[in-house]
Amino acid sequence: MNKIMRVELLILTAAKEIKDGEICVIGQGVPMAAGAIAKKSHAPNAIILTEAGMINIDCFQNLESVGDPGSTIGYSYCIDLWDVFTTIVNRGYVDLSMLGCAQMDKFGNINTTVIGKYDMSRRSYFRLPGSGGANEFAGHSNRTVYTMVGGEFVEKLDYMTSPGWLTGGDSRKKAALPGGPSALITKHGVFRFEELTKEIYLDSLFPQTSVEQVNEIVPWDLKTAEDFGMEIKKNPLPKKEQIEFIRNFEPFFGISGNLGRRLQSQVLPVYYEQGDIPHE
Amino acid sequence: MCSPNNKIMTTKEAISKFVNDGDMLVSANFLHGTPYALVHEIARQQKKNLTAVSCSSIEELDLLLSGGCLSKIITSYYHRGGGKVYNRELDRALKEKRVEYEDYTNFTMYNMLKAGACGFTFMPTLKSVMESDVYRVRTYVGDNKFKVIDCPFTGKETVLVPALNPDVAIVHVQRCDEFGNAQFWGSLGTIKWSVLAAKKIIVSCEEIVDHELIKRSPFLTLIPGFRVNAVIEEPWGAHPSCLAGYYNVDINWRTVYFAYALSMRSNEAFLQEWIYDRTDRKDYIDHYISRFGKKPLEILKVNEYMSNSINMGYKQSYWQEGLCTKLGINREQYDELAEKYGELDLYNE
Image 1 (spheres, rainbow over the protein chains, first blue to last red):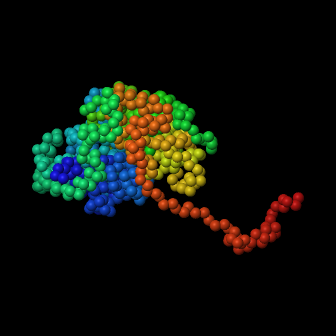
Image 2: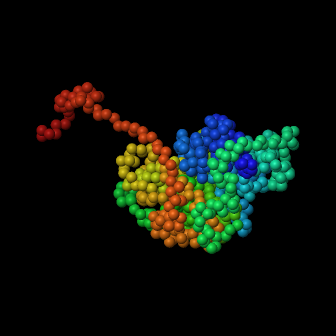
Image 3: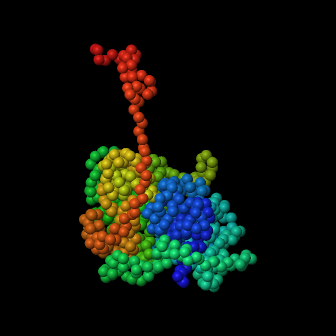
């Protein structure tokens, strides 16, 4: 094993944001894998939960959704979604929510609802899934960590689904919301939010990745740790057994996109038989 | 009220009897046990102008929309398979203004249903929604989407959602008795309050079981029989979704659907082959097996991880070896005392 995927490094880096003993809400996909790795390594006492009401899960394979009960061998507390958002989220017991995001602005506000105008007036506009549980998790957890795989940075969100630091500074505090975003992990590295302005900055880079590469995908003049008198850290190389774990945990993370879909379509060979299924 | 008998029927009967054109329909399962057998039958019967309510939908709303059943959607999540490249019926329908759509969050959506289920007219909700476009952008629900008041006790600014009582709920569970006592386990999601908010309830289950079995684990009953209108036994009734204790998500099959959903024409081909040309759920599963063999279904079946049975217990008799454990006397002595102190002399008249 000599080559790894960026997304594998992303997952391992995100896992480090979870501290031992923390109560941690996990969103679908990459965050779930990060939670499982944290529990298997440095945070065995973290309590991982999903909004579907499975509390203290111990996942051995990735959940197909946050409601998928078959990827954990038991769990210690079974409630429903209303109980999660009231007795756990609203009471302030969530230390950390780790969620995916599609669009993020410089203050960590998130759009997962629509690309383009909400009225879908153009051909190229399309719907994203919507809030799901993200709005309340982002608004009421003590920390929010985002992972971005296919998403983008924008000056202005097409739709504000989940609150981050709002307009920066003390605007979130004035809105009487606790917590706020603490980190964003992308395929390039780790971003954090400056303490006073709450503006996002580049904190650390993955190996073989440059600041220039990051600047290409950020539409504003991105600040880095160097702007605040720190150095841009380099993320360490992962251990081979960690990569092994991810590949067993969810084969889709490494092999995804067109290649993944092409392989998957051979498992249930239907759409080759239908003449008019367009291929990208 | 529901009559105690005659609830067991076919999916076809249940949908035809209890789902009317123009109804507000809630699909209660949250990414787990999605009631696909019922959803397919609604599409097959070409129900029209439904308002679909759901806290998190995978493909169930997309199928109903593709089948021309929906005129309004109220939801917090409408799954988009495969990312940007996959065009969905929802995108097409919104652009052509064939459907109205109102966005919520999972909690605000479920909170409205809980208010309705509890018989309240509103419910307070979490503040974060106010700082988002979920609050600011409103379509057909308009002013009544959210309201803000000062709490009459503390003065604290409080966001409210109104109660929602759908006409009919569809839900799939693991097991149910003939009276409609429906038991569900695994992630509980949004089933309880979604179902209880509705005026009519249709339950499909993997197995209809004896009432005695239900009585032994009443804590697994999420829906009481007296509220349920129809009970249907539908093995694999949630495929390609998952169901705790039975089967895993058929993710490959869902990817097949995402591919079909790309164009209007292929989407219609999917509906034709997998819904309209099928008579019922059994026919759908038979068709699946005839296309792909038995193996893809076999590998979905879950490994066994049995729950311990617990002792629910019932107490010993008050009469032990002829003596009353509460009074310390036997039956003869009891009758003598009753003769002495009895107030009504009925048998010697």
